[in-house]
Amino acid sequence: MRVKRLFRWGRINMKKEEVTELEHPYFDIQVQMGVTKHMGGWKATQELAEMCHIEENKYVLIVGCGNGISACKLAKTYGCRIVGIDISEGMVELSQNRAQKEGLTEIVGFRVADAQELPFEDDVFDAVISESVTSFPEDKVKAISEYARVVKRGGYIGLNEVTWMEEPSPEMEEYTIRAIGGCKPETAQGWEKMLENSGLQDIIVRPYRMKKLDQAIGEIKMSGLVPPLKGFYKLTLLYLTKPAYRKAVNDMVRDATAIPRYFMKYYGYGIYAGKKP
Image (cartoon, rainbow, N blue to C red):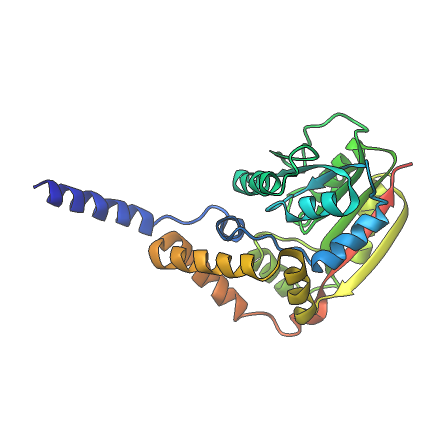
């Protein structure tokens, strides 16, 4: 009798899960895999750090810390102090675990926060960095204004963001929003204009075309080969056992096989930096 009750309970819960969809599939899957995707990989992060004059004893805010790998690598490479924020509690937990394992908790910390409403006083940080994050907020202008508010005078704001290399068609914009979790890229001129409107000076603009091989190599240099393999293993288990993840993965595969013609001609990224006067 007890076995029958357990079977009925399990069947009911299975039905409930079968109609459940992930609230934010693009990001939820990254959390479960423990990965963070940054355009250009570690090379782009280093370029951004140099443009923002990050060095020993500088105090840096990373907006959209993901799994914490950029924050930890920057702290070890440049000797800077870092606070990372992310809107995802799961990502913040991953970041905190990484910092603890690498013995960096005295100089690297993380907290949950929204890029559009930063929980910091004015003029706190020597630099604010955001990688593959500022394309996602509903109000990008407000987010960049927040970066400018919390950085010190004479400090820098640096962005590594998805960039249209040419003006996209409505079809390409719609596809990108759907396939990349709500991502809304700008042209290089668009990103530059937003930095200017936030009061920044000496703005540097470096757009790059997306090259799949270079991106793959950059990601391996950033995290190594083992973490992505572990992530795909975890995702496979989720796909086999969790209907909600199975649907999300199937949707992503469908989008990956329906890329608009000439999409890669338009899709790239840019490294941008400006100084607060």
